[in-house]
Length: 207
Image (tube, rainbow, N blue to C red; front, side, top):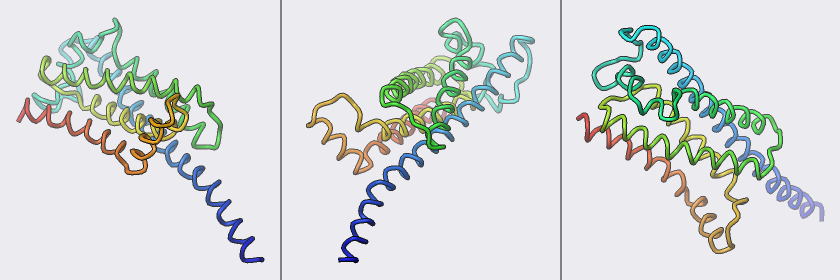
């Protein structure tokens, strides 16, 4: 009888602690991705201020003719909402960093708020993809800080996906499909595929 009780305790412990461990790992990825994005967008904002002070300033992120922040920051696409995109990114990454730290340290975030955060992240996935397309094919340059920002967005999006997919307002059939996708790691493949597409775009343009 005693071994059976111990086995039951072990199974219960695994069922309770395993999801918590996974969540902590996901919030850790969320926190790290947010920190990378926040630092990159903050440094980009500093470079933008330098350009506003002197249009002829040589920026530290002007590495060559391809990786040229001046070309990017002077382009209208970098202030598409009427203010520097980096300000929008700083706000976004600060929110994500706060959420990541709350979850990583054991705090509780309601499912509705987590879904709101995920919706914001999906917007930045689309916006970032558009921005990279514009940078590569219209402006003709890349900003190294933008690359780190988008890598942060991909990490954040991947983390929110796995944290939230059980709470999506979808039918049972669709939920089973998502469950199988997560179990097989297909979601991770999708985020890597997005990054690969953007790399291929740059290669096609600049190679």
